[in-house]
Length: 474
Image (cartoon, rainbow, N blue to C red):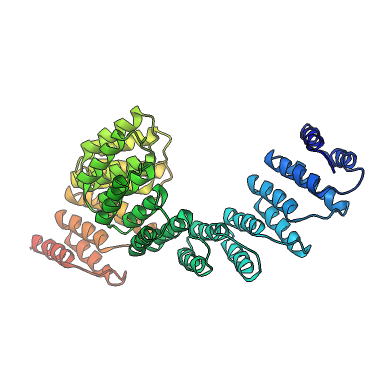
C-alpha cells in the first residue's frame, strides 16, 4: 500500500506537468506510480487531490488511465471526478460520468446522486434532476436532505415553482430532515407563483419546528410579499427579523423597500433606506432602484435627484431601471426639464437607453405642452436604434394635440400605422382632438370612421372630440 508521503509526491509531480497537458506524460507518471497494480486508497487520494486543484484536464486523463488499465473504480473515484467537473462548469461531462457509473454497476450513494442532481441544477436541466431524484428515492440508498434541496433549487432556477413546492412536500413525506435551505428554496418558489400566503405559512411552520429561520428564509418571504404587493406583511416580517436580532442584508432591505414602494408607501420606503445606511449595510443598485421607484410613484423628482447624486458619490452603478424610475418621477410631477437632464445623463453614461425611458421623458414633455422637445426625443430614438412603442407615440401625439399642431399629430399617427404597432383609443383620441383644435373637422370624421374597421372602441372622449370638431365648423 502506498504511503501518504508517496501519494503527495505523485500529486506534486502531476500538478507540475506543463500546459497544454499531454496524455502520454500523465499516463507515464501513473505507470511509475502503480508498478505493483491497483491501490484503491491511493487512487482515491490522487483523484481527490487533483479535483481540489481544479485542473480538469489533468483529472480526466488520470481517470481515463484507470479505466484503460481496468482498475476497479468505486463510487468515491467517480464522485471526485464528477465534483471536479462541477467546479469547472462542465455540467454535461458530470452527467456523462454519472451515467457511466450507473452502467458500470458501481454502488451509488447519496453523495453521487447529490453531485449529479447539482450538475442538472447548474445546467438548467431540471427534468433530468427530478428523474435522478426519483431513482434515488426508489433505490435503497440512504439519503439526506441535500439532493432534495438541490432539486428544489433546480426547479426554482427554471421558474418551475409548482414542481419546487411539490418537491418540498415529497421531502417531508420521505422523512428527510428539513433544514433552512429546504424552507428557503420552498419560500423562494412561493414568490414565483405569487403564493405569498403560503410563504407566511412556511415561516410559521418553521417556528413550530426545530428549524430556525435565518436572514435568507426571511428575505425570501419578504420578497414573496413584495411581489404580491403585501407591504404590511413584508414590514411585519422585517420587524420580526429585528426583534430576533437578525441582521438584514442588502437584499432584505431591497425587498422591503420595494414592497412599500409598490403600494405608494413611499415614506416607509425612504425610512427603510435611511435605516439601511445607518445599519452600515452598503446599498446596491437594486436597493437604490427600489427607493427611486418609491420616489417615482410619489412624483418626487427632487428625491430621485438626491438618490442619483448619492449613487455617484459612493460609486454605485446606475442601470436602465435607475434612470427609468428617475424619469418617471419627473413625468408624474410634470418636470420635463429634469426629465431631459436625466435622459441626457443616461445617454452620456454606458447605460443603454430603452423605450420606457424615452416614453417617460416624452410623456413629461407632453404634460407641459413641450411638443417640439417630444419630437426631438422621437428623432433621438430613431438615431439610437431604440424602437418606439404605441405608448411613446401616444405621448408625442398628445403633446402635439395640446399645442394644436394637427399636422405633426397626423404625421405621427401615420408613423404608428406604418410601424404596425397596435392603435388604441388614446392614439385616435389624441389625433382627432388635434384635428378639432386645428379646425380640420373632415379629417376628424374620417379618422373616427376608421376606428371600427381597426377594431378600436370609441369612448366618451372620442365622441366629445368629434362633436366639438363639427360644432367648431358650424
